[in-house]
Amino acid sequence: MGKESWAKYGMEKGKGTAMKSGAFMEAKEEGFAAAMSAPPGPAGDQILKNAVDSIWSEARKLTEEARKISLTVNNQKSKEEREAVLDLTRIAARKAGLQAAIAAGWEQGWKEGVLKRDSGKSD
Image (cartoon, rainbow, N blue to C red; front, side, top):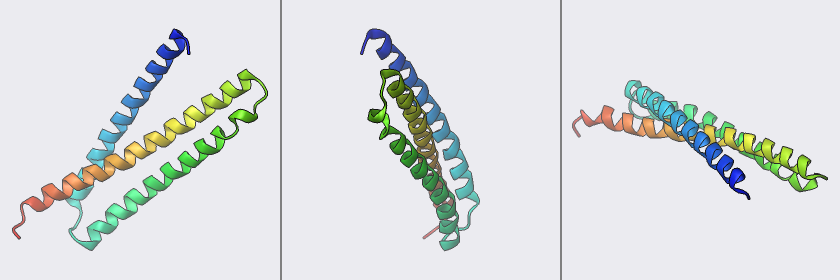
């Protein structure tokens, strides 16, 4: 990989990381707010399950799409075709990573929100 390719890779990686970090933090705030207003016990647990299961399901679906696209790279006849498929793979993987960051952020926010909500209660 030439210097330009590495520089481009580094810039793309940095953009992707910043995007995932922002999505994580936003989802963390949403999860925290949901936990603070959720009832304790099984009803609250169900709210978490409903919210997070659908987000993780979408992340798994997007990951599978990226995997399927990546499996076709070596089937391409020319370097240009392979590069086009690699670009599609990167885009699909970026979407999957973003969705996973959202799910992880929501879960982390929920966990912190429940701890804060329940910290005022005596045992």
